[in-house]
Image 1: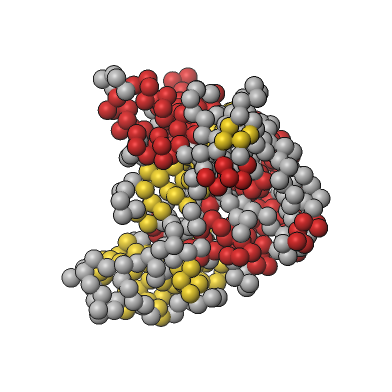
Image 2: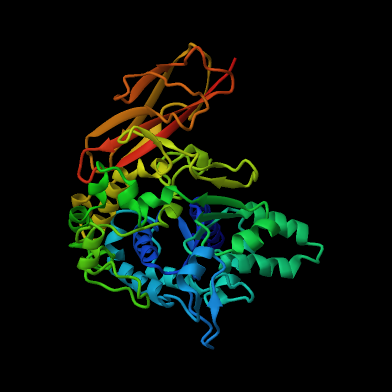
Length: 498
């Protein structure tokens, strides 16, 4: 081949590769290193082929900070933490090497993971993304750090695709990156363009406010940055899960399930996953007593019961399983369901008014938009755990689901509408189909009757009382027959017209 032809093919290939890579959502994780962050991090590594991780940054929070090494005393700005801890020089700091340690463990299962799916980042690449951000104190954002500079560089780069900023601790390192951008450009001719660029690019997924920097700096100075704020739904995957999860679903978070599916026989990464009564101790955190079996019994918990992955909804949201929730978080999906704030058009929130009907309690439930996915999420986790150690033909892989028509339909009252999907399974497993209406999401307030809802081809009649502009959300759910059973989806949104 002539050199010019080879170069052309090479450039085309590189461009195609770049386009394929950019199709995955870009994300930066900021973390304070609590035990639930560690477990979230371990699970996230098993899904790291599903999104483009572009930064892994140590940060602080109201629960964890390093101190400045000078004996400076600090009192939290958050009332509950101030009351609990008072004046401190440091607080429960787990250090700045734990992400690298888990990436090393990931490296040991990486050769097997890539047999099961494309796109897993190399351990070397992940290590290259780790930076230390603003960690001295809760909410510290007075100076640039290598972590804040790294975030700043990504936000300013020429890639216009969104950057999802996962906030597993405080927002302070992200706030410092934004403050540094403001300081550099505020009084220049480029400021309006830069501010617009960053506001269109950055999307914050925050699990609670774990310092005051969002309220004090980001919200007033960057009011058009999109924020997804999870204050209630994450509890079904966090410390309070025994109070939140219905009894019928608790086995998926119990010690027997975790011992069989995750903790044992699945390689070094999952051997490091923390569970109640496992006899292990998180370095640097005297309050991590979960490994003590007697401590577990005090709370009515058993050995190897789930502790917490309170931050996992932040990356669940980025996994494309066909539910289309990244188009609009109000659609609901694996990362929960939020609605637009009545006072801020750039902020989506959950809370006590964002509920799904819980069929186990037969009540509207503020956690159920997340809780409802526990069985499929846990089965998926178990399958990924198998990917760490099993050959391809002994593990399970999710079905691929498609619609045979457009995902958005225009319909009229009284019209009979055909729904048609199809699916294939990479393992050749038998598949079961289920069409269901996500009632809480559609703006039509009634129920629709779905005919042949257990078939690939189904139908429904648009209710005659449906008004123009009403939407009806219909989910095609396909599950394979191999254990652990895996599920994928497609969503049809039917909009009523006159």
